[in-house]
Amino acid sequence: MREGLRHAIFGILLLITMAIIGSYPARVLFVSRTQEKLVVDGSLATILLFGLIAAVLCASHTIAREIETGTVLLVLSKPVGRVSFIVAKVLGILAAITLFVWSTSMCTLIALKSATDQFRFDPYLMGGVFAAIGVSCLIGAGRNYFAKRSFPAACATSLCVTITLVATVAMFLPRWEQNRYLWARGSSYFDPNLCRGLILILFAVWAMATMATALSTRFNMMSNLTICLVIFVVGLMSDWFHGNIINTKLADLERMMLSWYFIFVPLVLLLWVVTIKHFHQRRNLKLRVWEIHLVFAMLVGGFISKAVADHINQVHLQEPAPWMKAAARGIYEMKNGVADAVYAAIPNWQQFWLADALAKGSIIPGTYLLMGALYVFLFMFMFTLLAVAMFADREVGKQMIG
Image 1 (tube, rainbow, N blue to C red):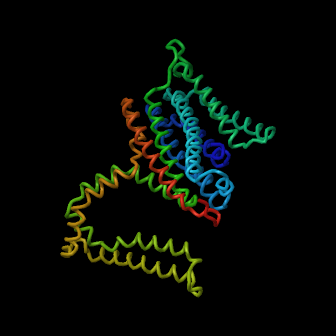
Image 2: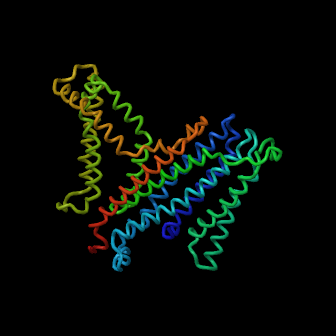
Image 3: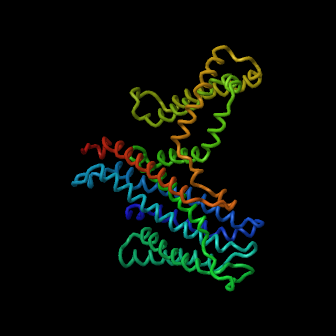
């Protein structure tokens, strides 16, 4: 946990996320009677997105960079096995991400309570959020100067404490309306339904952190971030993709086969990137990089030219060839099974981001939380096993340690 908190990028992401969520009450002045929905939707989306980025960066800094530089040899040379190393890294990253989500969740509860009035936000609670940020930075600077502690780690831990204190005070305050507190109505506690929604967000970030940790054993930071973002976006749209694939008709597939050559475009682009990445390992030293770019650019240009020519000639109105119909029928017969398998394999992040349900006032049952927790723990267990398997024969520092 300490190793993840010591990185400056973690502290920067935490402060940025807190500042964004803390400023949402000021933006509700530009909406009409939907100020609470804006705060909830924006806060949940901010925590989920920045939590993913923080998880990937923490995993890359604590594992991928140590593997690339060989500093992991200092740990593995001791009586510490690779399994213990990976499990400890996973638990440490999860602890750091839990602190991240806890702090931002407290800020979300405060922001929602300060935005209850449609025309005026609560300046005291909103000021308390930024005061907690400022005090935490001062504490971090003081501990860094006097105790030689890491500033990002000291700032993050102190911010967790200060924002929790502000949230505790805010929980017992009455509702804010017409530029004053309605003390006669008593305390206005936090919405327990929103707390359940924040717990689901924590589950989602845990899953993404474990996945990023497993990928960091083989990929560098940029590759890891790219893969995780793709899985994140596809997971958010998995319901849409699955529904459209299931509802695709045979006639639509036959028309799509008229543009069969588009299948090779992503393959050519992938081969292009891989070839350039491994260009220094070429056997023919006379080969120049511009020649490779020229060949692949001509291939992509050929596909685009073919598409333009087909559009001009209105090929999509023609009758598909018999082999196209046969291929379309084969795809049609197996598409449902493949779509169901991929849909089950890819995490559906929409099941954890319940902003729409919270906006409608729907109650999140406790059984839903238990099912979500069971799914996430199984997901984390599988990716931890994957991380152990991927790291078992990983070359570290040009050496192999069993």
